[in-house]
Image (cartoon, rainbow, N blue to C red; front, side):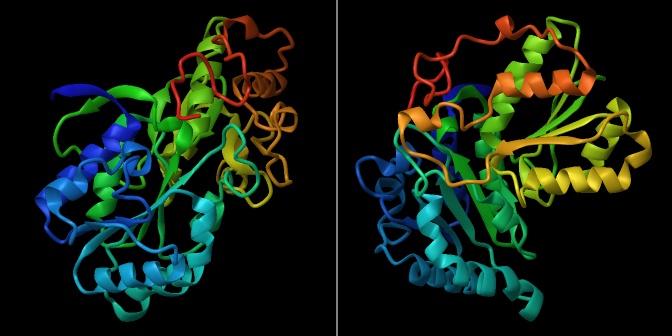
Length: 351
């Protein structure tokens, strides 16, 4: 299998080109899909290649346009609806929850709709542009919820989402758009609902999603220098969750740390802790733990965001507590960017 190095935004763009090339019923719509910035480059060249009847801008009427996309899906199309901010998509929850999620169950009619929502954090984004509400969507029966953490998964998971017959919420962390990686060429799909074991170990099971997977990788590499081998699971899909993979790992390590990019209460991480406590109680050597955002709106200012988001250092410290180790090799973490509101020297944008 051949591979090409590219960032996640380009990988998403390649997936959209492939899907529209393979199935003329695939549509791409949303605010800004045809503007010069092309939604962080993810929709570049689509309208020029496939025409304005299949790739088109929409009014800022989120609920109405989502209803139109649902109708198109029910009529046999495969719409991919794009929103530049998850926060603004909240206006369309009625269509998503009361129609898209229930139609297949109620009327035995598939709804092959993919909704791309961009979320994350970054300089100046604040409480109305940086919400990570994956647990809201994961709570709704009938939806599938996808959160890639690499360029390869962004492409493979998006292809699987577009060709799935159920509505899929595809959540893109904006800090991952410019993450570089090796991506398989061609139509290589990543199955929905199957997690990836990124690192094997016997000390602690770390379950992560989206950008927290990157921070967890840094923590695992630093801990390895002290002989601490953690097993890292990237969920890739938060509904359905790959429970067999999590349970098998926890039964091997006896410890669990669940990471979440959202607020702690009602989080996906909380659900993972609960299910592990129910299913693996006899295998646990320590209480399961989670690491998520504080239960308050996300701040905007440079000063207030400094200690708001947990990163690799916080992950290491929590693992140290679980293992009873006080001296941790924090010096082996990669050098941070001079400004805390960009992730590190390996990061090249977008803010």
